[in-house]
Figure (cartoon, rainbow, N blue to C red):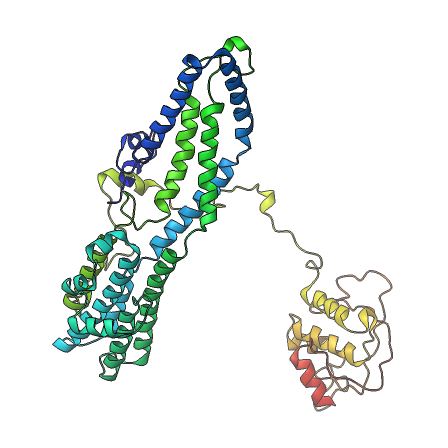
Length: 512
């Protein structure tokens, strides 16, 4: 029976593990007391022989032997070898538990995919789960001592109800010299395929889900078989065991108390019981005992896996789920918080203080900044008017740079983009145009009324300003004119750059 003590250490407090030190079942005292008594008895026998049996000449020789053993015993890397070994064994031990073939996930898939409230539908579901339980029993018989003692033969498995006599004949007539724990999984697949043909499983997706969950279950059975077959390499276990026992064999001699009158270094005190050597033996030998207990958790030690309990639990729960609980639903009702805008379960008086604690918002939620540090800083070029900044950016992207002539095609593109992205209306642009005062019926020649300018007529050059312009001389709806350098355009035009907006490309195609 597994030793469970988690409730005793639910809260960390002063001396929280002190109550656990007095437990006997599953404790290190129960595992180690024989080895500890053996080591202490041998140590006391050597100490008594040194003090009362040996002659003076023999004592001198024994003292040299003690100094030699004490000096070279520290060369044995007990901590390194033993620590790495125990880490490996504990990791392997937990992975073996994760590989236990539990039927919970499989039974949920069976009850949701194999339909039918009649007797045949019930027979399908119960038989499928019985096959899964049978596969688990067969593999646990192969690896667990406790399960093998419970089911020593296949006849016991038949009498326990996991297998019928007809199934036993098929199982034994199958000619295979290997472990046949996988045979019930094949029966499961065949029965699921038959249920699909009869319409008990309504579509192939449900059948696929059922078989995938069975493969997960079967893979766990296979992992248990492989863990039992492939052990930690024997040479590693031998190295660790030899290192521990040879170290304490050297300590039996090297940790003896010598006569202080001889003046040996670090032997100024004469005691009969080596307290710290016993503690060291307790820790190192106890560590080795932990590895011995965990390397095979399918035995009958105090902390080994309760495989028989898991078999009983999985078999009962799976049959309840696929039989009595099939299509068994409670009446649908509105929950207690149906009309609540913010649902919150109540607290008892012992936990009412939790209601006053604020919810966690994030690790940076409580950071405070100075007021001046929270001001946004404008980037370069953002102080200029939007259309001007946009035009400068486009001119930097154009192949000719900032000195591209406005009489050319690219200069007209910049002008069109400025006009398109400016904040003025068409009326204000018409009012500022030089030919806005033309009489009715006369078509102006400057092209101000049409955003698509004639590429064959160059625009007049804009003269650079000779001095700072006053606000009155610059229209409020148009930014100040920028100086441009006239650059002759090549005779042939290539395709529009891919980064230009689509309206410019459309204009170019229409004017070509």
